[in-house]
Amino acid sequence: MNWPMIARATLMAFAMKFAATEAAEKRWIHPKCSLLPSDKSGPFVVLGDGRLMIVETNTVLTTSDDGRTWSEPRPIATEPGPGLPHGGISGHNRSPLIKTRNGVIIMVYYDRQSRKWGWDNDKKAPAPDCHSETWAIRSLDDGKTWVDRQKIGDGATCITSIIQTRTGRVVVPIQPLLQNPGRWGQYTCVTDDDGKTWQRGNLIDLGGHGNHDGAIEATLAELRDGRALMLLRTNLDQFWAAYSNDGRYWRELRPSGIDASAAPGHLLRLTSGRLALVWNRLYREGKSNHATWGGDCNWSERPASSQRQELSIAFSEDDARTWSKPVVIVRHPSAVCYPNLFERRPGELWITTGWSPRPALCLRLNENDFAGR
Image 1 (cartoon, rainbow, N blue to C red):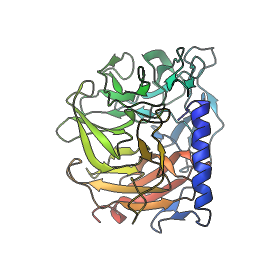
Image 2 (image 1 turned 180 degrees about the vertical axis):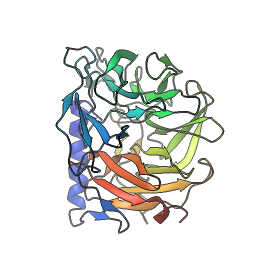
Image 3 (image 1 turned 90 degrees about the horizontal axis):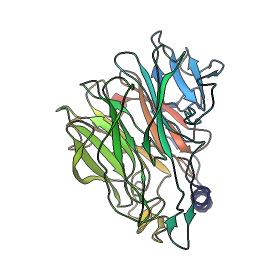
């Protein structure tokens, strides 16, 4: 996520601190996981001929050999902004992609040219001219050309998830900056015509105070009964869960019971019918506490776990009512976080990171090696 410079400096300071205290450790990867052949972190879509496609910055790249080699980048848009497409960069700030059942590829991103950010640590408040816009663009021909570039929302800085429901509706969570006190909220934008037009839903506000506080970086999945589930990053020691009958209006909100540090997770409905969740748990395995950040109303109103050194996976057979015992799949002495989960083939899961480490850590695992444990 492209946080403001001051927040990025704070993140780096914390990362250096934790890296120093754990310098004796080395990266560990679960023996049933394997490294992917490249550090391209997606998100990935499967094209009609079986190739994989990603978007990096304002370009499209494809691979026909599961990432061993990549095509030369091909520009998406050559005309000037506003709303110049930007898919992010592997290992940092990726924009969500989806290929709908009608074969339309949609990307949602924020406009990096018009974005303004500032945070006043003395006033514990965002600068008055803070501004960011969320845009969408789509391709009808497997990424060769792109059309219908349009602004769909205001105030977003990080978008981490996108889904299509059984009705054909595409749902994407957007993160607006809220004021007095400064914090983040969440709402969704939806499209029923493969990204040609969009509608906005209602605001979810969990309160808080700080440039990393509030309802942050949601991840989505559709439940078997047709409802949509949203898991929200918080500073409250667990994800909060929101439920919607249509993906647009969210009228049920409660603690999820899934312990989590101040970091996002990623949900995915698998071909098997299970839900998979990859995330940073509240504490490291076998521990009952962890260093915190925040509590100053600049980062956050209350101290929150900074545990980003272990990434875990769990599965649900009953639509997130219960989960399998979490399994740590990777440990890293500094951080391993902002995961993206992709099912390359039925039961073959790719897990890539999107903030740290850099270059991205890109893993492959088999669902049946971990599910039901």
